[in-house]
Image 1 (cartoon, rainbow, N blue to C red):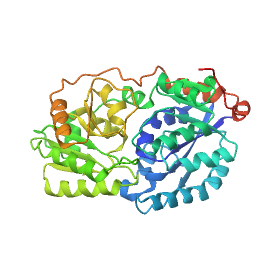
Image 2 (spheres, helix red, strand yellow):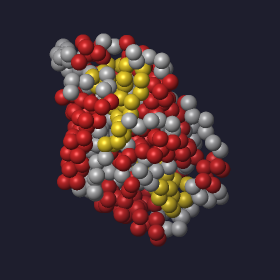
Image 3 (cartoon, helix red, strand yellow):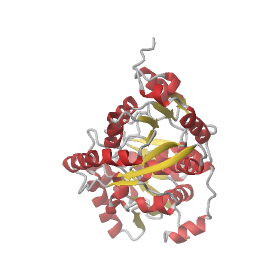
Image 4 (cartoon, rainbow, N blue to C red):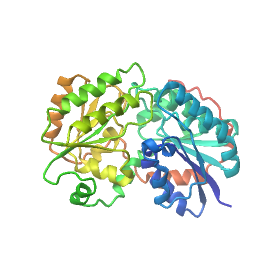
Length: 381
C-alpha cells in the first residue's frame, strides 16, 4: 500500500519550490500525493492562486480558507484561528502518513500544530534558516521543533538545527528545490514574455518585489524610499509584484498602486505564476526589494539583486547580491550598480544534487513509528 504524503501549500512562494516535489510524488509508484491548500492561495486579493495549482494538473484534496480580511495583527490571528478549527477534520479525511511543509509562513503554522497534536510525522523543508527582519524566524524554528524530518538547503542550516536539539540522523542537506525547478525549466524567449505582460520591447525593465519587515520595521518609510529611488530610473520599465499578506503589506501595496497610477512606465502584477515569475526575473536588469527570490533564485538565473533592509539578514550570499540600507541614497546607488552588472550565472549557495530523488527515498523508506517518537538530542558542542 502506498504511503500517503500530504503536501501543504499556503502561498505562491512555497508552491514555487514544492512543485517539483509534488510532480514526482504524483508519478511515484511507492507514494501517494495528497494536497491541502490554504493561506494566500485562497485570497482573491492576492490572485486566488489555488487555481494555478489546479492548472498544473494537481488534485486539491482539501481547501482550508482563512477568510483573512486584511493584514492587521487581529485579522491574521483570526484567520489562524479559522485554520485551527478546520485543520483537524481536513487531516482526518485525508489520513496522511506524513505531512510535508516548507518554510516559515504563519498561514501554514496551524496545520503543522494540528498534525503535531494528531501525532502525524512532519517533514520540514528550508528549516534552520535565519531572517532577522521578520516574524518568520519564530514560525520557522517552531515548525522545526514540531517536525521529525528536515530537508535543509545549506550545511549552516543543518548545524543550526543540530544546535536546536534535532537528531542529525534526520537532517538532510538537499539544497533548494527552487534551484531544482530552474534547472528543469525550459525557458521561453524574452519576446514572448515581454509581449504577454505588455512590457515595451524597446525598454529594459526592473522587477520590484517588496514585503513587510514585521519586526521593528518602518514599512511606510521603506516603500517610500524605494519609490523615490525608482524615480531616478525613468528610462526603465518597472514591474512590481504584490507583497505577501503579512502585517503592513497593505501600506506597501497602497503606495505602489499610487505610484503605478501616476507612472505610465510601470505596472503591478498580482501573480504571474510559477513559470512566468522566473522568466520575468531572468530577463530583467535586476530584482529590487527584499524577497528571498533575490537570494535563492536570482544568482542561478544570472540576475543581480538589490537587497534592501534587514528582511533577508542571515541568508548566505553570492557576489551578485548587493545589500543596501533603506535610505534613498543607498538604494539609488545600488540600483545603478546592479544595472551595470555583467549578467552571469553563478553557483548558488543553495544548490543540491538529486534533491527530489533523495527526498523521495527518505519519505518512502523512513520508519515512521520510530520517527514520531521524537527526543531532544543534546550534542556536545
